[in-house]
Amino acid sequence: MRLNGQRRWAAAGVAVATAVATFGVALSAPAGAAPGCRVDYKANNWGGGGFGAAVKITNLGDAVSNWTLKFSFPGGQRVTQGWSATWTQSGADVTAANASWNGSLGTGASIDIGFNGSYTGSTNADPTSFSLNGTVCTGLQPPTTTTTTTTSGDPNPDPGNRVDNPYVGAKQYVNPDWSAKAAAEPGGSRVANQPTGVWIDRIAAITGTADSRGIVGHLDEAVRQAAGSPLVIQFVIYNLPGRDCSALASNGELKATEIDRYKTEYIDPIAAILARPAYKDLRIVTTVEIDSLPNLVTNVTPRPTAVPQCDVMKANGNYVTGVGYALAKLGAVPNVYNYLDIGHHGWIGWDDNFGPTAELLFQAANASGSTKANVQGFIANTANYGALREPNFTIDDTVNGTSVRQSKWVDWNRYVDELSYAQAFRQRAVQAGFDANVGMLIDTSRNGWGGAARPTGPGPKTTVDAYVNGGKLDRRIHLGNWCNQSGAGLGERPTAAPASGVDAYVWMKPPGESDGASKEIPNNEGKGADKMCDPAYTGNVRNGNNLSGALADAPLSGKWFSAQFQELMRNAYPAL
Ligand code: BGC
Image (cartoon, rainbow, N blue to C red):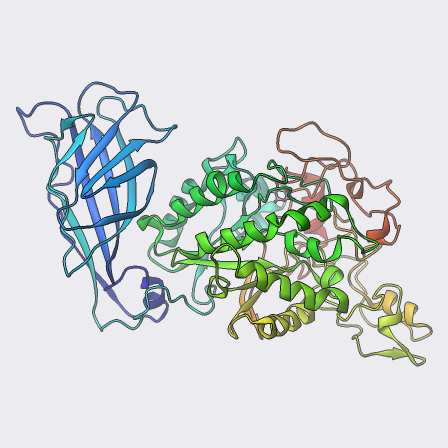
């Protein structure tokens, strides 16, 4: 019997019967009992000696501004990880003290805390008495224990076993905050029901910001949307120390050295929330630290594209340490699926970059106590614009004896589009040591390249450049351009298992959210002004000194950019 394999049973269509013992959950304190507190304690045993417990504390006495809950385990249980309180244990005695943000508890108010624990032997007896601030909780409900049994045996004997492709047979979470913005645009209701990534782009995003709900709010809504079926919810983990070392638009809040804050204030609280029993049936996809490791391959000394800040991050090791830590902590949650970022073909598709990126990712997957088992796969093209397929030419074509690789656009790259890149990277990653069943995600949110200017066939075979330029769908000025690209359109709608080796096409970057501000905008998110977001900028070595191709008047990265959203809808391919 185990709860954390349930997603797999559901996918396999095996019925799961849940026996819940309840004892008048809604009762108030017994008449005549001294006012004080009530505790509802619910343990979910998942077998193998593991369990999760949800603990609801209700204050039946005077309002308090701090609280401490105490109880004792009757059978040698241990708390392994707790949330929404500071949990300590001494022998059998457990103490949960309020966190900084939930100390005040009014009369009649309740608070939900919880923990994961371990037990030995065949039973996991509930504690029989609780006290709050020294007062025994006489309004205690008889403890309840939830057990889960399968009707046809246990097809998933390994509690950590995930489904091979979480997207297959699952609904996907529609972020109501993004959806509302999309729906408010003229014509936006045509796309507002698409699933998009939820970016946890700073510590404050964990509990929620003015723009969006926090992780708990998303997960609660995801449980509601799931309505008992398998459902994928996608988070982007994006807050490394010294984030976005090669650009300025998405520089983050943590300084290059603040790896400890990354661990304790960012990853630990996220992992604790994702591990809550209430979310055990969701398939939680995390895409881990966009752009970070690829930057350590290409934008460091002695490359001509080196950026001092990337040299700093390579030397201090904090990207590798942080990614390893994130993988280990998030991967310890049995229903989390980690995907590592691999940039895109117009970045890592050159021979010098391709293998070294796979090797570096493998190193990070084994850093900070992580192992490769924590990596479900990889994601290509996150928030970028590379075409999914270039149907009008291949890398093997030649024009008058000259290879397509020698064209200005391809410039010796080994790939011409994201699909061929992602499929090849999968194989190279396996060669580097990753498991043979890793799967790819491709962000197709903004790589549609439709609209009136979309070529309908190959270019003329007069010169290799005429051939490539005349036939290519990607209409960027240069492959290295990445900010709010003019002419781009929505790409393939999110789809499960669309091609060999590909787990899904996803919309990880929420269309309509800016890549960066066209000019300096003061903010408290650490974000700088990157010239690549200014349409007048004439470029640098990373984009071959070309114009940036960015739309004008863009707001700060992550903020809603109505004009871009309209253009993405206009140039959608497939068309809306
Ligand atoms: C920004 C994030 C934002 C994300 C999704 C990134 O470029 O830095 O703040 O959440 O895009 O729009």
